Image 1 (cartoon, one colour):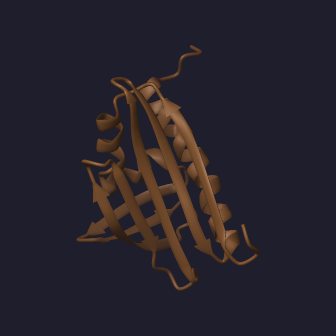
Image 2 (cartoon, helix red, strand yellow; image 1 turned 180 degrees about the vertical axis):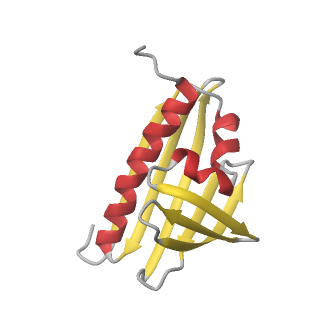
Length: 136
């Protein structure tokens, strides 16, 4: 990571079918169910506006939503970002074994770090949704 650009990748292995995982991620309205801190999502064509629990609205452009390759890409279009691209890939390792990778690239770097922190929580939440609480 350079001082200006933050480029971070997080990943998690989930014991679930890749298509089922992507069905949730690929529906742009479902993000409040699996991304911590997001309480609402509105979609109009390729544009999505998310609202955080701090009442901040963040406009995003959906760049890729490919159910065949199981890739979702979006960029935050808020003027506070000079550049932003997030990519979520769901990779099938087996019939009920998947790797979910969340990559973030942003300028300024501190925003990339913040989104990556949220992405870590989102990946853990996805694992919980698909695997359940195995501790009780």
